[in-house]
Amino acid sequence: MTTPALLPLSGRRIPPLNLGPPSFPHHRATLRLSEKFILLLILSAFITLCFGAFFFLPDSSKHKRFDLGLEDVLIPHVDASKGAKNPGVFLIHGPDEHRHREEEERLRNKIRADHEKALEEAKEKLKKSREEIRAEIQTEKNKVVQEMKTKEKKPLPPVPIPNLIGINGGDPEDNDIRKKREKIKEMMKHAWDNYRMYGWGHNELRPIAKKGHSTNIFGSSQMGATIVDALDTLYIMGLHDEFGDGQKWIEENLDFSVNSEVSVFEVNIRFIGGLLAAYYLSGEEIFKIKAVQLAEKLLPAFNTPTGIPWAMVNLKSGVGRNWGWASAGSSILAEFGTLHMEFVHLSYLTGDPVYYKKVMHIRKLLQKMDRPNGLYPNYLNPRTGRWGQYHTSVGGLGDSFYEYLLKAWLMSDKTDHEARKMYDDAIEAIEKHLIKKSRGGLTFIGEWKNGHLEKKMGHLACFAGGMFALGADGSRMDKAGHYLELGAEIARTCHESYDRTALKLGPESFKFDGAVEAVAVRQAEKYYILRPEVIETYWYLWRFTHDPRYRQWGWEAALAIEKYCRVSGGFSGVKDVYSSTPTHDDVQQSFFLAETLKFG
Image 1: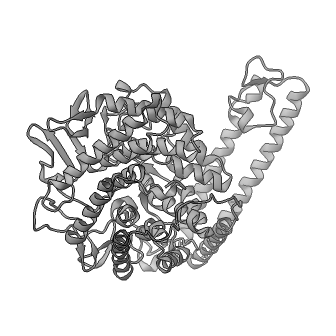
Image 2 (image 1 turned 30 degrees about the vertical axis):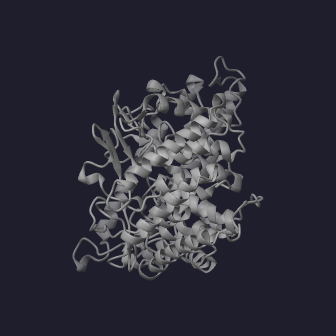
Image 3 (image 1 turned 180 degrees about the vertical axis):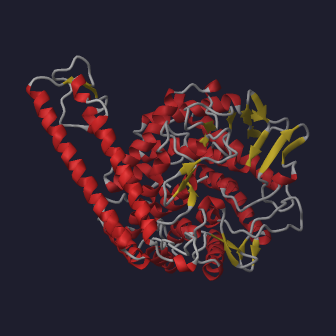
């Protein structure tokens, strides 16, 4: 799941070029005269070859015909429709042919002069020492850096910031609720202060080892993911000194011009989403500027035959690729389908439609595709535009695609009817094929794999209870009550997955096979990594129904986290929720501060 606070509803350093050491012995540290002569011969031969090709290939003007399929784009001063028999073809004849020959001769002379100039420059370069060449390269690098800094300082157009409601709602009248809220705030302080002390600037924290931590989704660079991800929670909780510390670090240290391969999806929801949320909450321009800088770095990921972005992109080179494990090189629905909200906001804030067009292209492509049983498979090949493995899930690999369809509609003040229709169609297919009731009466969301329903539900899928409640208003055929009740049933099932463990914390996934219900079977599924989805659903259900059970369930989860996940250096996930003496995984996830504690 993603940080919900994005919605009002809810300089550059270039590494030095390594020119040494030379690959030959030290007494040959500079090029000898004979080597220079050989290089000149090679260069001269190359230029001669180019001129030969230019002057001895057939004169295309004699054919009097050119096929310019894209002349309206590439050569805008040419009117292909005049004197042409077909679109994209024009003829040269009469006086036009004479003018063409004169133009061709002028181009020949220009190319000859350019080649002679290049040859002279090459000769001059070969006369210089290694130190002189290195100095020239450094000068050019400095020039590029200054140009990039100038580009970065280009002001963005001023746009009105939406009025956000309910951020400063005051203290609750109920003393018990007030104390519980202060406890959640103290947990946030404990997580933040220890990150500030032991992991500052790193992406995440190892609270037991008391040092920084990162994973491959953030690449090889330390980009302060926890800082960016936690900003909106800090602001909402009134921790403005901590918010200010985070803002200062971002102003002075957050740099996206790094040679690092990152997950497009993860940096979008955690960084662009986090920065935009901080901007809308505080009005501080630096957050908007940094969000746009990062977004520009992600755009090359969309350079695929279909426009479906790669999962990974190198922030420096722009080279993209997909995860090796993802169904024959496919992109993942929950990743390329979870860009819409941030990219629409980027176009709004910059006035540049490129971001909006990228995500709308994805939507249009998906609308044209056939869907087995009306379900969206989790994998789509960005080269062929065809579905990969027929695996549909409302949990991992699929989850936030559906969330973003609904929130796109809400974000548009319920005018994006296309998004709402896609959401309604998808939910109807999910309810028909994936949502079942166990023998014990628990409603769960299974996974569809190649025509077979797997009776397993992931912790990630537990967000759907809140989504169904959020989407109840505006549903088809006056089914608001039905979807609110469905959300409540999912919340109950996910609560049972917590209540049936020793720690009262839920496993990563749980089965509904035979006598086993809402319980993890495999050891690899018994861990809890501080995920927010169950608590998020409690929050939505409480907001819509004000049924006190949801607040109580949320408080029970908070107490379990405090008891079993809190360590001296922060909060850690646990490896087995069914063991009364759990082993910690020693990772404080950035989303624990961004989401779990926000909903707590």
